[in-house]
Picture 1 (cartoon, rainbow, N blue to C red):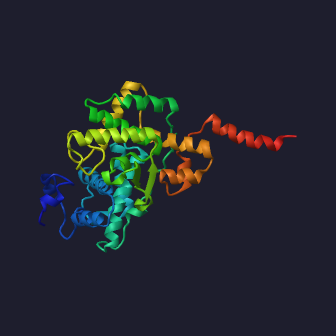
Picture 2: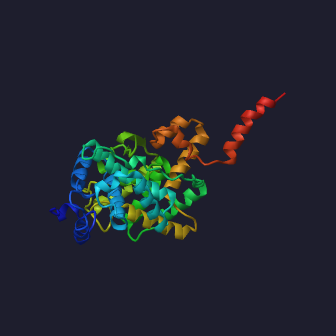
Picture 3: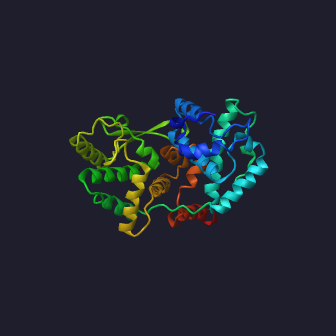
Length: 326
């Protein structure tokens, strides 16, 4: 079996793959045989590079820590489930992490089945772990104000501070997923300051937002500094000072960790999403409006983002109290 190092090295280093190849029984097919075609076809269909990377990470974990190195190894779902549960225990995975790895390897096998490389995807027969829904906490108005103020002061250079401030401004008013903001391109902004968010959900259906004056000012200042640096040609709106491929999730995490350390409370980008959901629902009571604003496919998902509060409970009490009025 020829080893295409250039194509396959993103799964494992060549030496590791060569070692695994030596263990594959005659007549069996390695788990990674169709990987190059999967990547090429998946991306050609306009699907997410992030999904491809997550499938790769799931395959990498399985190849390194189990004996499931052949596609044929997955023909017995009961045995595969036992191996994966043992892996979960050995690596002390949470139920959520286990389910994520299962989902991602299932994505690969769904594709194998569709392309008729296998007769049946038996991964779908492996049960998910039951997850306890964690309590989701929205940021408070005071916390949002503190984060926005600190974002203006966090960063070694003016362009970093302007970038950080704009990112937080957009989180505050749009409540977008952080990955959606990192994906923003210069072409997603028109001359009037209207922003197009190309949703990760809803099959990429775009959402449009007219920015308020404060956010427009932050955008204008950031673009001015970006142009001064001669980096206006770069496709991504949010740039990295160390790379030319745009600001990354890793860089964003470093930024939020710095804010958390400075402010003495945990700063999470999704806290803004819950803040926006809760604020809009308090003001409108219209779950469908909030759901569309956030880009959710189902209102049921939006309810999970709304923080319970005395104000919301009091609204319900005021309504129901009228039933007992004389």
